[in-house]
Length: 70
Image 1: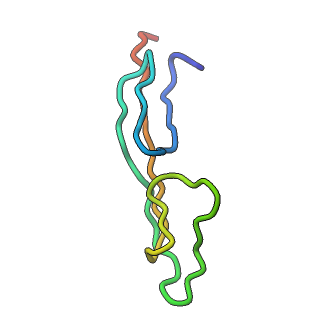
Image 2 (image 1 turned 120 degrees about the vertical axis):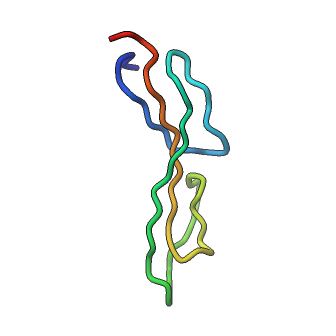
């Protein structure tokens, strides 16, 4: 893993601690999809924040900043 770069992971349950990185800092992307006759589905394993009972899709992330002096 590059030690001088930021790191972003998709959240699943909780954000883990990562050696050599500051964080985690949580964030998300949320967008509205069709409200009527919506066919969004969550199947198999999917990241936290996705719900087929909402009128949109929300994906949650964990971000980290390198603690190395680069």
